[in-house]
Length: 347
Ligand code: SF4
Image (tube, rainbow, N blue to C red):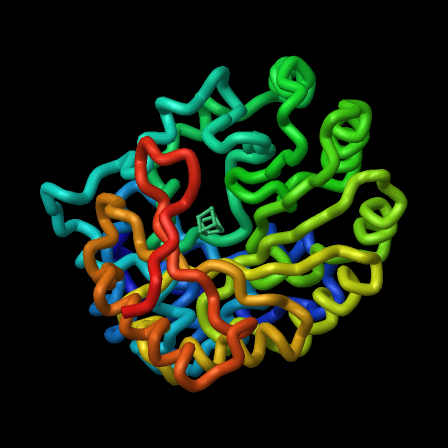
């Protein structure tokens, strides 16, 4: 959306009032919700903002202050800014890029559940995120059709209960950690009641983009569960991993939560040996194991982020040649129709 006049751009003095001690829900409410707000917070002037503002293609801007505070001021190539700022390139159509590249609609036994992998089922626990990543493979996902009211979770859980081979539940979304504690704890309790479920894996970007979400209360609930918890966070660049994120990860680890990271290989953001090495080293430093490096999916509106398989394999080979094996993530891609991710060897 292009602002009609610079008068619509909030003055910096109004934007920079975030209180560091706000709770996570207040921080989420105060998140930047337009390119103009976001760019003004990074000290771009009104003319630059007009020049840099592109249509959002139906996927709105949403960026918490905690993420923006890690961006460099006035840097159009900042690797964090590039992940969240709508760009004109999103309007570029390509016959190989579409709105459901993983054909997830085919794996829905019922709304709210994706049962694609043996032994595991994915539960769509929330229909939105704390940040809107422009490269997201679910940017066109029909969350409104999939979103379950709390009372309707029972139907999804009933499906899981009827499949005794399901040992692991993956909470996904959207981002499951945008649920309030009462909502989340109710869901955890219901999953604990299904005896054949052993592990609960939470896929969330909140520990990275809104680390205030990781409270003592939340961690204590996980620690008190009979389930084993894995949180798969999502960071693409070492600059995302500030001291606030390190503190959140430390708290989770103190409560016996295993932390893994998955990244997406993104052009101009992290498609270099230096960026990937730095990311892995910083992840390890704060207690997160690098897990997957995903090749970008062929999602409509994301051609400008695309990195080829050959480039990905070459980067992984360079990492293997210079780093310990446990710091090198697996290069992977989800292929429609396959019952597990395709993992690629280095080139
Ligand atoms: S947090 Fe994850 S699901 Fe949400 S927009 Fe970003 S990549 Fe997509």
